[in-house]
Amino acid sequence: MLEWSGRLRSVAPPVLKVRLPKSRPLRAEISEAHAAARPAASSSTAPARDATRPIEGPKALGALLRDRGLLTEAQLEAAIVRQQQTGRRLGHVLVDLGLVTAEAVLEALSLQMGVPTVRINAFTVNTDALNALPEKVARRHTAFPLQKVGTTLMVALASPKNLSALDDLRFACGCEIQTVLALEDEIVSAIDR
Image 1 (cartoon, rainbow, N blue to C red):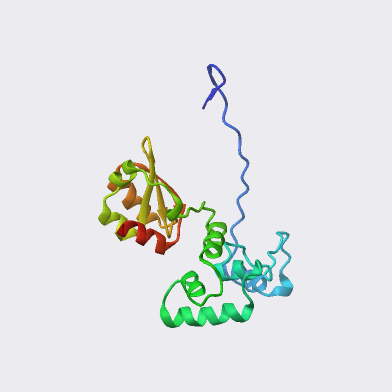
Image 2 (image 1 turned 135 degrees about the vertical axis):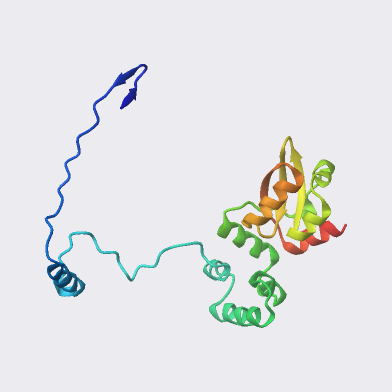
């Protein structure tokens, strides 16, 4: 083995001591496995995982809005029922029902995904950005190019974590993609202009 410390020199490999268990009859292994399966016979020194504590992940949109005091539990449940009936995204349903504003949904989605937001209507669009992304690809992924700086294209997306869309955008424009979150309705109306 060689070690790098400014110059190469030979180093002896570390010695590992391994203890191999003695072979035992199969019947003894089976009875030990049954004994280990019983909770009373368990004497493991490994710390047990708390089964009552849930594994934390990103919070759902409805839960974020409820926790921020923008929705009641009853309003959230009614919106979820409507969402299941219509098949639309929860954010759209909440706005359509007049329970929250589009800005509140956008802000909650930004917190949920960890992506910055932009309002397309208030953004001055760069013509280089428009020319960099074909309209067909933009419509397919509900993406709107906002700004191009060097080889990086800033794109507004309604689903900025969609990896297949990001790969398709990267391939279509030949640029690195920087994503920002925007309202789907604003993206569609900007593409139509």
